[in-house]
Length: 252
Image (cartoon, rainbow, N blue to C red; front, top):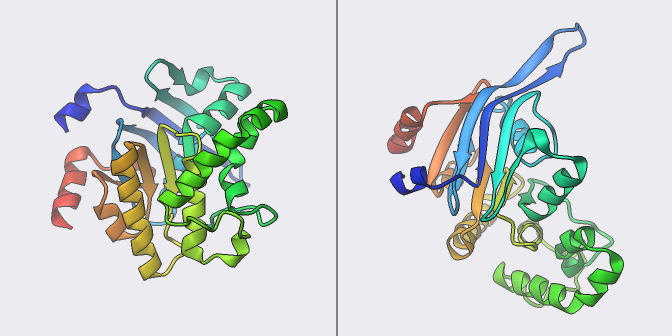
């Protein structure tokens, strides 16, 4: 962890607050001045009871929602972005290129085949003319990712013909299509049986080791959490201290 401490984080949150208005005029504070960092090539798991703010945090970090206050900083090899300075165009570009998303319920488009679903981020990032020029390059990348997640030969199948585990593999390949710096996973095995979950656990760990992508995973699954480099326990909108989280890790 000393080497990680010395490096600049891929993403960091400082004094992050997220509140929601209630019908009685009060505010429900879900994130309470939360602070965290994720470093390059690090896999971090967030655990905690339902309702403590895990998914809300992921939505803020992934630019799907905005914090009420506080700052999120994103870094790649050449540039730094701060959430408070981002235009809507910047937010869209970072969501598309910097961040990959894996959700519990896959969110594959049923009218597209498997390869087309994997290619979705390229459709969004390119004008039609530019996409057509790069089509063969994009398709080769998509086919390579499908082979990497164990779905070679399934490129032209409809998502509805696949099992739950296979659909999640397609979703993971899609999330990696544009080589994001950070992969955000929200309960990626929450909708799968235990045997299928184990295969997804192994796949995420292998991809993390092979691609050196930073991964933040929210999970109720203790086995998936145990495979991370660090585990952070969330309670009432904030994390335990690093020392407390280390005790959780050591005792599990």
